[in-house]
Structure formats: structure tokens, C-alpha cells
Length: 161
Image 1 (cartoon, one colour):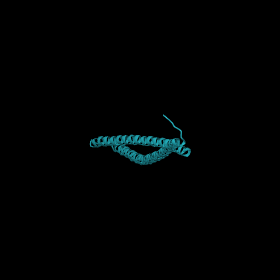
Image 2 (cartoon, rainbow, N blue to C red):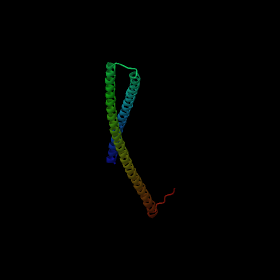
Image 3 (cartoon, rainbow, N blue to C red):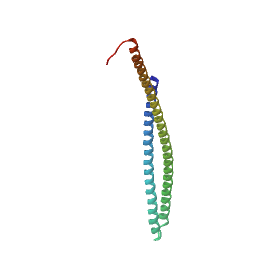
Image 4 (cartoon, rainbow, N blue to C red):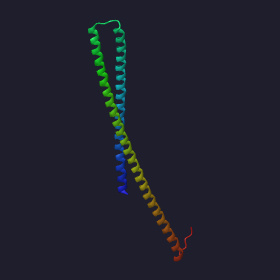
């Protein structure tokens, strides 16, 4: 019985640790999701700014601008495009991190579920053992009562209730 109790305690401790790990992984996944939302918002800003700047420039270019101003505009748009490309890489990396975080979280959930199933099986086994002991005690008590009741009339003793 003692080994069963220590086994239950071990499983309960493992469940506690697995729950803490699962919660930490869930928190990490949520953090990555927030990072992705932020990166997407930045990407949308950059793309919106690039589109606005391009449409303004297209309108200005038809009114005749200097070659120097045109060159600066192209350099600016080139740097803006580089920023968009860089942000796209950040977004891709964050999405890969989220996939990994979700995979880790799923593994933690599966482990926790497995530990809970082990706990239930051990609790069921412990309950079965306790019921068997109770049944054995009940059977022994009934057998003793039966033996005692059969022995009384034979010995000549009379027992009135």
C-alpha cells in the first residue's frame, strides 16, 4: 500500500511539473503570436507608406521634377523596399517560431494527458485493492460470525438476544 501511495505522489508531482511546463509553453506561444501581430502591423504600415509614397511620386513625376529629386526618390523607395523585405523575413521567422511553439505546447499537452491517465489507472488500482481488502474483511467477519453461531448451540450454551 505504501508503494502505491508513493507512486501516486510521484505521478502527482510529475503532473504538477508538466502543468507548469505546459503553462509556460502556452505563455511563450502567446508571446510569439503577439510578436507576429506586431510584425504584421509594421509590415502593413511599411507597405501602406510605400504605396502612398509611390502614388504621390507618380503624380509629382508628371509635373516635371529635377533629376536630383528623382534620384533621391528612387533611393528612398529602394530603402523602403529593403525595409519591407527585412520585415517580411522577420515575419517569416516569427511564424516558424510560432509553429515550433505550438508543436512544443502540443507535446506538453499530450504528456500531461498521459500522466493524468497514469494517475487515474493507479487510483483505480488502489481503489480495487481497498475494495478487495474490505471484501476480505467482510468475508472473514461473516465466516467468524457463522462459525460462532454454529458453535453456540453445540456447546449447550443458550444465547438469547
